[in-house]
Amino acid sequence: MKVCHFCLWGPHASGMYMTVAELVAAENKLGMDAGLIDTDNLAGGYSDDSTGDVIISKDISWADDADVYVLSSTIPNDYKLKGAPIVMLMHGCPRDMFESERFDMNKDNAAPFSTLLSYFNQTERYKAFVTLWKEHYAYYKDYVKNCYYVPAGCNLNKLKPEGKKYKFAASGKPNVVFCDAWRFMKHPYHILHGVSIAQKELPDLRLHLYGLPDRDKALWYKLCRTAGFDTFIGEFDHIIFDLDDVFRACDMVITPVEISHRIMREATACGTPVIAGGYEHTPYNFHPYKPTEMAEQIIRCWEDIQADPEGVRNRCRETAVKYMDVMDTARGLKRIYEKVLAAEKR
Image (cartoon, rainbow, N blue to C red; front, side, top):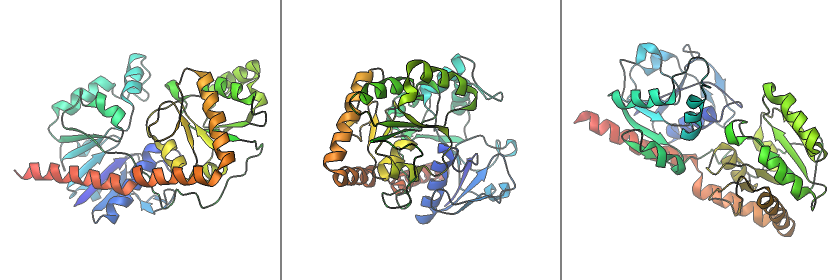
């Protein structure tokens, strides 16, 4: 089975790319002929090993005899009316995409969310829609036909507790890391307030924030200085290329998000506990809008680490092995490809 993934190239910079690159490698290990086409560079030839396996982007002609197209981004115009049946990977959060349309935030004249959904339903070549998060499935199934859920995974051979560790310029006890995408409610506004409360009991705590967009730097700096948050902030706005090194080095990762998104999977696989806003695979959960609950979970997690660091690390790793293996994701997608191809032959 020849499977052609269409995705924007983005080593170290895009969680979507990293997920797709891992899937391509995993599908090849399962015996499929899988490849990735960068929709911004149809000539191919880019090479990357950031996910632990070497991925080389394909020339667009590689798609000509593919059995299945898997879209994570746009498909080139010349291929919109020809080629293989399409499986659409729905990476985005439906709520966030709706908010983008609602507030007219789409960039580069991108099609609005509602327009895309209507197009998918009316275009025969779109045979299946897959979300990697069951929390999103509850929404997508109301919008599109033939909707499936396959749990997201990651490359457990690369993302593991053993390996290189990052050195924080301003280290703390504990070192807490935030490195989500800074958009909608994935930014650290509430987290800053929760950490501020926790620091009263953990005076040596340091919060390291990564991925701050350049356009927002002045605003976030002003907020932190005004509220006195700069007293516990360690590193702020640095771009880190190898986050697994950071996850091995820090004591915990914090996020307001409730789904098993990229950051949570990578941290858990590296043996680092995640403090989250309702995540099923961590014992450290808080209500995203209740800073006091957040502080309680930070303190509780640190107490657990102090009492049994190896036990905390091992439990995280066991969770990743059980629920977050990209090979399981690839097996689930393979079943969907086979179902699509069987229906095409009828």
